[in-house]
Structures are given as structure tokens and as C-alpha cells.
Amino acid sequence: MSTLQLPALLTAGELRHPSRRTKCSSLRSFLDLTPVSKPEPLTIDIPYHDPSSAHRYDAAIIGCGPAGLRLAECAAARGLRVCCIDPAPLSPWPNNYGAWLDELHPLGLASIFDHIWPTATIAIDGDNIKHLSRPYGRVNRSSLKTLLLENCTTTGVRFHPSKAWNIEHEELRSSVSCSDGSAVTASLVIDAGGFSTPFIEYDRPRNRRGYQIAHGILAEVNRHPFDLNQMLLMDWSDAHLDNEPHLRAHNAAIPTFLYAMPFNENLVFLEETSLVGRPVLDYSEVKKRMVARLRHLGIKVERVLEEEKCLFPMGGPLPRMPQRVMGYGGAGGMVHPSSGYQIARALALAPELAEAMVECLGSTRMITGKSMNCKVWGSLWPAGRRWEREYYCFGMETLLSLDLKQTRRFFDAFFNLEPRYWHGFMSSRLSITELAQLSLSLFAHASWKSRVDVVTKCPLPLARMIGNLALQAI
Ligand SMILES: Cc1cc2nc3c(=O)[nH]c(=O)nc-3n(C[C@H](O)[C@H](O)[C@H](O)COP(=O)(O)OP(=O)(O)OC[C@H]3O[C@@H](n4cnc5c(N)ncnc54)[C@H](O)[C@@H]3O)c2cc1C
Image (cartoon, rainbow, N blue to C red; front, side, top):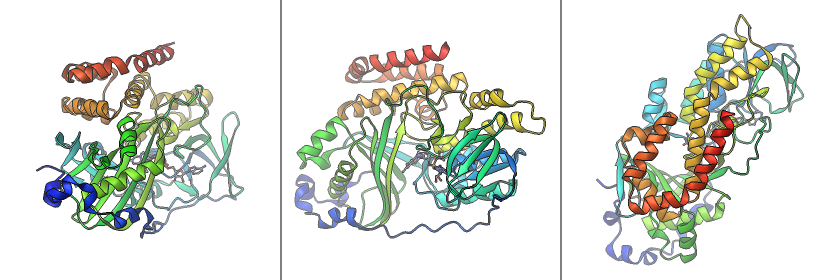
């Protein structure tokens, strides 16, 4: 069954004259609806750090996001004394997370999805729709955070409900000053505070980062055209902008797509997304495009249950390595530069980093100071993984240079690749050799127009990637 069942929902007249359908006071007003859900803090007993004690931890982890909590759990399970610092460790996470089932299943986390769709769909345009037989799920944020907090509690992690303000380093220990006037002392500090913490240093300017911006709502709607067995990963169609020449022209140059998770016939998560932009696309324009799209789809929003403003950087240089503070998750450059995905990776790589931490800080304590910093940074970013990231940055730079038509041609070819290639690319599982094979396969299977796009758009990003790889080899 096709995902977009528009003809079933809209009359022929409506399809020919979308503007006739509704002048849309109700649709316009969805932007003005106040989200009804007020997230409540989680109710778990967690052990707190005692600020009056002079306790020295093996590791202080800044941030109780998915990355910080997972790393804390893994490090403490291996015997390290860990303190997590976050102003509100029990606050629910604000973001709606999606991931492929095959990413979380091997981690024993398949049960934390609250909804799984057996297939995902890509609408290249109105007629060209691809069905991907790879199950995709929405992460139940509350379940995942509860599980990680419980595991942390069982393994002895302490929590300090404050904001990390400053970090001072002595030879063999560091002290994190917090906004409540206290300090947490540890042999190693890890910044897992997300994309905007100030503690990680860079050698190279970060002006070549791209930005993903999106406006999302979890909404009760009158009806929607989506197949409940499929989640809509990307809909690049632009027919909804036929009556909006200005928006249409801008979308043709800097496209956005719709991401939709239909939970039942009246409940759906909808997100209009700019995959990557530089400079970042104006947020109000993203919202206007979404209003036009929902109107075209005949979706009337009855209630907004949750609203999500998504904005984060992608790509750009990795942090300077090594440095005293270890970066993990969004703070450590781990977001996928071409797709913006990260959560599965941060969950999967935490045991590796925890192993390196234990080698340095475990009972034998053989590795300290700069050697420890080299060891932990090297465990997360061995040469192969840095090269792979350069390739994903090359992918991001290529996407940045494509307009709507070229983007459609690119994804048409990309999702025609053998599944092992596009699965591996999206889940950061391919070696640099496999990524090179993917490029050849993409070129071989692309339409001639798409090949022209590649030949005309890729040389500069390719040269930059080769330059960066050469710099890393020195
Ligand atoms: C709206 C949105 C939707 C996303 N959707 C997806 C998705 O579907 N799939 C996916 O794979 N990725 C997604 N991402 C990308 C990425 O996975 C998320 O941003 C993810 O939350 C990053 O995890 P993190 O633990 O590194 O940081 P965060 O989740 O940002 O957590 C950081 C934590 O650190 C705390 N903190 C910050 N500063 C300090 C400080 N100074 N002191 C103490 N604590 C501090 C914060 O309060 C927060 O609790 C999304 C991103 C956004 C913004």
C-alpha cells in the first residue's frame, strides 16, 4: 500500500485546487496552540553526591542526556566511582528520538521503543515512493531514561543536581565548579552536556558546520493520509507550495522534508525538517512550510500534545585530541554529519570508552595524566573512525550543495543502493573502504543527471576531505 493515500482522503476537486479546500484558520492556528502536555519529572530515588564531603571520583560526567547516563552506567558497572552533574537529573528529555530497530536490538534495548513501524518510506516526489524494509521505532524517552537511571543507581553512580560552571585542572585531578557553589573532584572529567557546553576545545574554526533545524509536533488530528504500518522518513514532495510562489522558490533552492510517525488514525508526530543547512534556515519559514504541507494533506490539527524545536550543529572539525576534558555525545562531535542521528551510536560506543577509562582508572591505576587523555580520546576516535567521519562530513558538504531536484535524485540513487550500504551509512557501520565502495556503487547506479550533479558538486568537498585526511595522517 502506498504511504500517501491522498486520493482516498481528498476529493478530485480538492486535489486540483488545493486552495479551495480550506482557508485554513484551523490549520494556521495550530502554530498558536499551546502544547497540552507538561512533562513531569521522573519519580526514581537516585543517590546524591554529598557536597560537604571531599570525595574524589574516578570520573565526573557533565550531563544526564542519553550519552552521559549511558556512559555513567557502563563506567560504574566496571567498578569506577562516577558522579553525574546535571541541573535536573530527573527531568524528562525534551527530544523525540527515532532509531532503527537493528541499532538498539543488539544492545538489549529493543523494548524501549514505544512504537515500531515494520517499514519506512521515502517519498522522493509525488509518484516516486520507496518502501524500506527496515523496522524503525520511536524511543520511549521516559523508559530509556528510567532504565539508565536505575542502572546507574544499581551500579553506585552519584548525582549532583547543579550546572557545571568551570573546570580547573591539576596534574592528576580536575575540579568541576558548579552553579550552587560546590565543586566535584575527579581524575577524569567527561563533557556529555550536549551541543552547547563550553568545555571542549577545538584546533580548527567551526564555521564549516551545518545545522539541522526542524519544527515538530505530536498532535491529535482529524485524519491523516499515512499508512499506520509505515513511518515516513522523508517526504520531499513540494506540491503543497504550488500556491505559495515565494516559499516554493526558496524550497526549490533549500529544501525541507516531512518526517511523520503515525501512531493511530488520529495521533501523529509530524516534523518539517531541513536536513542540513549553512546558514541555518529561518525557523519561521520551516513552520510556514509545515502549515502549507498539512493544509495540502488535509490534516487539521485538533490538539498539539508536544512541540519540538530542533536545532543542532552537524559536521565541522572534531575536538582537539587529546585534551584534559573528554567529550562524549553531542559535546564530542558524535552526531552523524550527514543525517543528524546520534542516539544509537552514543548508546553503542559507551562500553568501549568505559573499557578505556577502566584501563586508566581501574584498581591498578597504571595510566594517568596525558597518557590517560590519549587513551580515552584514542578509544573513541581511532584513526579509522576519524576517517569515516571525514567521509560523512563530505556527504554533508555534498548535501549542502544540492537543490531540491538534485536532492531528490541523490536520495533516489542512495536508497536504491544495496541495503548493506545505506543501512551501514546511516548507522555509521561502514569502514572507509566500504564507504569508498558505496561511492562507486552510488555513481554506477545513479541516473546520468545525478552523475552530472556529483561531478559538478563534489570536487570541492572531495578535495577538502582528502586534505583533512592528509592532515590527520601527518
Ligand atoms: C529536537 C532534537 C531531536 C533529535 N532527534 C534525534 C533522533 O530522532 N535520533 C537521533 O539519533 N538523534 C536525534 N537528535 C540528535 C541527538 O541524538 C540528540 O541531540 C541527543 O539528545 C544528544 O544527546 P547528548 O546526551 O549528547 O546531549 P543532550 O541530550 O543534549 O543532553 C545534555 C544534558 O547535559 C545537560 N547539561 C548541559 N550543560 C550542562 C552543564 N553546564 N552542566 C551540567 N549539565 C549540563 C543538559 O541539561 C542535558 O540534560 C535530535 C536532536 C534534537 C535537538
